[in-house]
Amino acid sequence: MALALSSLIALMLAVSFPFVSFSVGGIGNRIELSQTATTLIGFDQPLVAIAVILTIVVLPAVYLLGVIWLQTGLMRNDPLPKSRAIARSLSHLHPWMMADVFIIGALVSLIKVAGMAEIELGISFWAFCLFALLLLFTTQSLDADWMWFSLAGEPLAPKGSRTGETAASQGLAGCATCGLVNRLDHGQCRRCGERLHPRLPHSLQRTWALLATATLLYVPANLYPIMTTTSLGQSTPSTIVGGVVELIQMGSWPIAVVIFVASVIVPVGKLVALAWLCLVVNRSDELNALTRTRLYRLTEFIGRWSMVDVFVVAILVALIRAGALMSITPGPAALAFGGVVITTMLAAMTFDPRLIWDPPLPKPQRRDNGRPHETARQGAHG
Ligand SMILES: [Zn+2]
Image 1 (tube, rainbow, N blue to C red):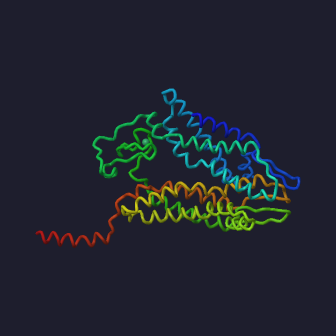
Image 2: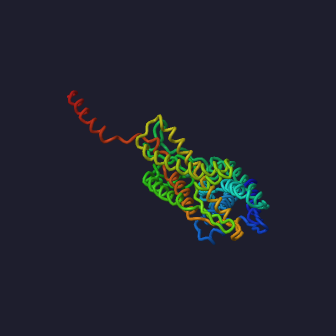
Image 3: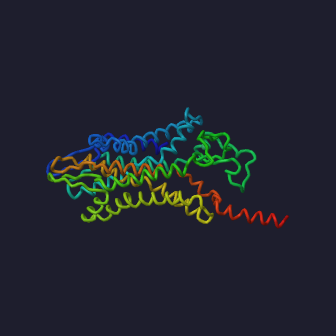
């Protein structure tokens, strides 16, 4: 409760003061946090603007208000109305909050322009750093097991459930949100009300479709410029990889590595890893299942960090506005790349990791080979 309240206060401070200002040759510009999104609307990039404002301000605020609502009820020992629905939505909101990624984006942008112009950090910048840190502490200290136990108790396992056998074979399933073991015929979790599936419906088809979308979007994301820099009347568009090369030429090795990892290695690695998991999932063997699950968790964890480059564009476009002297405009690749990040995140969510642990599907050849063998044995018995 204390962390969520202070985090919300820090967020309010972060949106009400100047974020950062820059000046070059006497011409300057000072921006507020919200302008990182609103400026993009002016450059016909409303979708990128919505993604930025949702992930750094709106969704974290909704999450924190949800936590405060839940904790208020729990501290009075009488949960407030809609507590179960709110608690359920917290776990769905969690991966879409990107305040920490935005901080990295802000640092990258500031280092990028530090050599060319004078930069001054505003109160809001420090408030936002504090907010990102407190938000991290809030999510870390929220104990989902304890919360569900306090909200709705700990119902016993369904009657007749046996250990040592898989849940699916007994018509049981663990709830993906609160972890409670349920009988599948209820359709919903007895404790949190989340819908239950033995395996996510059409998991592999949906994951493949999203991976195909992400792969297609990755092409314009790399071919088109992600931003255009105008300096002394001369415009130079730069692509994602071009930006990395520029950074190396400027001597900013660490920043070049951050952008290269976030914009190239992570998305491509994610696409390859998820595609491989989808391909081999029906041929699983026990030995590999643990490694595959770890790989899946890694792809799920790192996905959101690719947003760094989108945030860099949002910040630079809002900040660097001194007309022909020096200005930065967004390119079409920003939308395409944002699309790659979101579709790969969705692809990781639609992939059902329980499939990794399912026994392999019998291959048609094996069945054909088996039949004559079986009949021959039966014949011998006869
Ligand atoms: Zn549940």
